[in-house]
Length: 210
Image 1 (cartoon, rainbow, N blue to C red):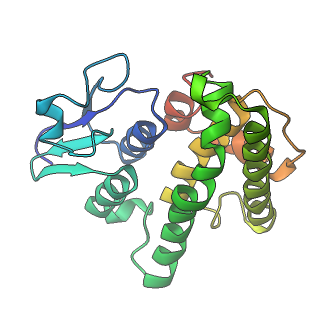
Image 2 (image 1 turned 180 degrees about the vertical axis):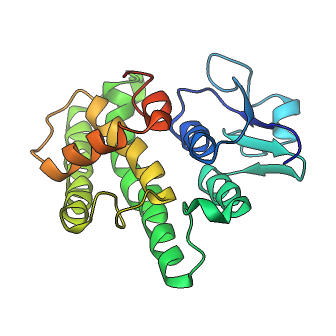
């Protein structure tokens, strides 16, 4: 990319942070622009022309427009195959994408109601029974990650960071930052501290805290 890419989306969005952290790991220049709740509206004609789903993030570079956070992360990693974030070998690549898809389709849906009720204080998400059910399902999925990390060698799929760690690391941060009872998952705790050694994660995964 000859010029810095533009990343449209507020930095507090977990999906925007995936892209920002990926850029940091790849050493890419970018310009982040605040769009979304509290900022420029994603329902404006200008934004809908870029993403008809009215969702962040959106990436704009010399090649055009791209949306969906995991697809953006894959795209950026593919532009820099030497980074190791997304392996070239089919089997190794499939395993990274498997955990990325698991984060999006299995893990994320479990925490939606509880997070919106406990953190965002959304009035439509205040039924205690549904919050408790969401928390139980969330912790059950985190137990799967705990089991995987118990047998891994530092990161989700071995000794090296991959895109799977970027998306799952942000999910771990969200889980830890939500006011709830957290089961004792020592492998996840060790993983979180290991990720925290990376400047990109400290900047975009730990809410800017050292």
